Image (tube, rainbow, N blue to C red; front, top):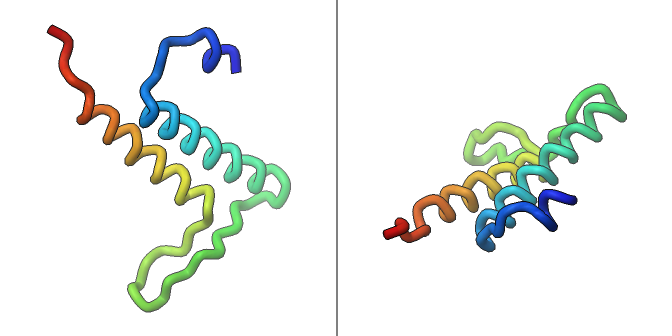
Length: 77
């Protein structure tokens, strides 16, 4: 929390990215701490895709947001 308040100024995409990654990691961590394992419940059998959970979705959204941030910043002159 202190880093978010007094740390460097971040763009919207960076805030979204770091927030989603932290939230997803905490979700998987809490699940593993309470249950001893992570519960994956989203299964799309029609396209033969791995089973995953919402925390995994948020981690991927965070990575995509950070990539958007990295490629959309203008170089310093």
